[in-house]
Amino acid sequence: MSEAESSTPQQPQTDSLDLSSLRLIPAWVADFGKEEKIIERFGDREDRPQRGDRSDRRGGGGFGGDRRGAGGGGPGERRFGGGGGGAGPRRDGPGGPPRRDGPGGPPRGDRRDGPGGPRRFGDRDRNREGGDNRPQREWVPIPQDIQVTIYPQDETLDTLAQHVRNTGHAFSMFDAARIVLAGGERFNVRFQCADTRPAPLFKTTADGGLFLTREEAVAHILNGPVIDEYYRVEDIELEVPKGDFKSVAVCGMSGEILGPASHHSYQTKLIRLHRDRFANMSFEDFKRRVRSDSTPETIEKWKEQASKGRRWVYLKGEVAEGAEPQAFPTRAEVEAHFRRIHAADSVIELRDVNVTGNIDKAKLTHVLFIMLRNAVENARKHLFDISQKLAAGLERRGLKMFKRRSGKMFVSRVRPRAVDPSVVFSAPLAKIVELLKQNSGGMHLHTLVESIAPSPPKDDDAPPPVEGEAPKLTQQQMEVLKDIRWLATEGYVIEYSDGMIFLGVQGEPALAKKADEAPKAEKAEKTEKPAKARKAPKTIVPIVDVLEDVFE
Image (cartoon, rainbow, N blue to C red):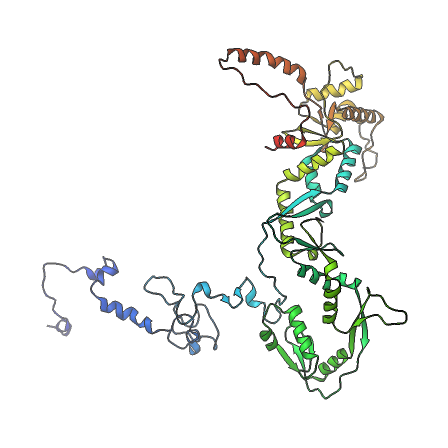
């Protein structure tokens, strides 16, 4: 017996063949009854630090090891999948979802919540140097008890009506609605409070701003150009600060010089800068960003700034002869004086306010501006409402509405009418009417004129036409245009704004109606049930009903 054979253990002879080593069964069946192996395989995970513990992010060998020597980053550096094949988040078991709760950190739903509530997108970088540190608006729900309505201005309606009269063309009401909504100066926006709304709207009398609260309206006046009507700012010379200043404080984000910490103006400037530009962060975090600068150039620059000041001269008060007008040395005193004297008169309370569509964004509360923008976008998507208001306004100005071309609503200076067989036209007019009868789909103005009065053949030696210059018409073509204009003025033909020409009414509707009455009468006699009584037709159809029929 060889050495290899002697070292091989003898297997007992059995009639059955063990196939477990071939892995023909699932792993969980093969390991059935071997709980100690499962505990040995996964039990060590209970001793590993959980997600959120800072000690598991410093190296690259696994959850329990230090990653600093295995290709990982420095202390505090966070890597995704790097540093030596570190494992993923801790799981409850094989194939289970990652655990987000544990002593190492808060649950996933609370991870982004802090003392200030849920964080918005981009807040992570807003407090860093060079980031956007402007004060962020609070989340304010859009009020449901304020109705926003858009309607055309009277000046816009007058201009459209005059254009229709001058051209004699028929215009689509949807096209007219698009023209009105294309410019904010052509329509007004109405903000109307519901009866259930307890608080009104607040409008500034000086510039027409609209706000939800009185405090917003007063703040708009104080921080806008309107305040210049009440106070005049004057530059004055101050005494240069005396003392041996070793350093000055400088804002680490804006670079504004605040002055020495021991100077009396330091705290005032610090509070003002935080309020005006960095109110989105806490005051303590803002103070930690302040750095000290001891360079002579910065100290001298601060002294130069401190030697110049301002004062606010009151313009509205009465000044006695020979006396100086009232003046205030600080901005805070100006605001307090304005609130005490003018705040009540500069803001009025209203429940129904109209503003122009192109109102400056700064003159509206942010929520009201969003409501205005949404109303305009909705009106541009659904043109029926604004076209209905346009039609009513144009009818009051003497124009006529009618339906043509697949049920669309048009406006013209005359109502279209059918060609009465008893009317005898001149030969040129009759030729135009006959051509339009033969072309029930309409004809373009150029095609109609060329069919009656063709242009002369082009001269090869003639200079090319100038771009943008109207082609020259012959005398015969001018006469045809005059005839078309006369027919359009009488309503026998319709000249649309896109250049298409149609008969005012196709066919002879009066004769067709009489021809249809006989079959209807015979059908009514054969019907056993009595016909229901019909209401008498209206002689005058309101424009609202007409538009509803068109766009139903």
